[in-house]
Image (cartoon, rainbow, N blue to C red):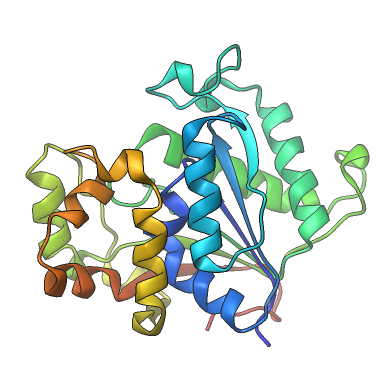
Length: 249
């Protein structure tokens, strides 16, 4: 059985787009899986879409929402600070609590670029997760957040230069950044074609994003199926080892 897996992402739909294949695979193989999402308030429409996405992937619910506001959508969490503006100690402590509760062998989050588009919330999620993974194993930090737990490895969802052609053209066509890493930085190229249908169903569950012209779910929905299948069939990760005992594949 693969190790338990906790994925930490910024927005509802990131879990499906960036790691839907690996999440579906781990859930199907009986591993304990969980997803923490930094933005959008419980009870909001996108929180409901996230619940449907997790169900499509086989990840147990309900969604774990930190409830901060999206960088570009203040109404996503009325009265709450934007994720990028939240006090660091508070944000790290809340994420530490989830790590200590789930006790994952592997934590997964976006790379330092924010995975392709460089969204500020994605980059902030990367930074906050790095701090939380370290802090979770130190008992004198955030003692109120539970017993210390040190994950075995951190994996960064990423994209190599050699694999951005079609997806890069798609994003470039709507004026979005395309930030990829040298191929040598990728430690795990994962064939997720056996779980592609679940991944696509999870992406489609984010109905509000599918309806938007410039959002990636909407862009994917308008592609020919053959092209979309090709884009969704492989995921890329960079391993940051913490101990020797946890590997994604």
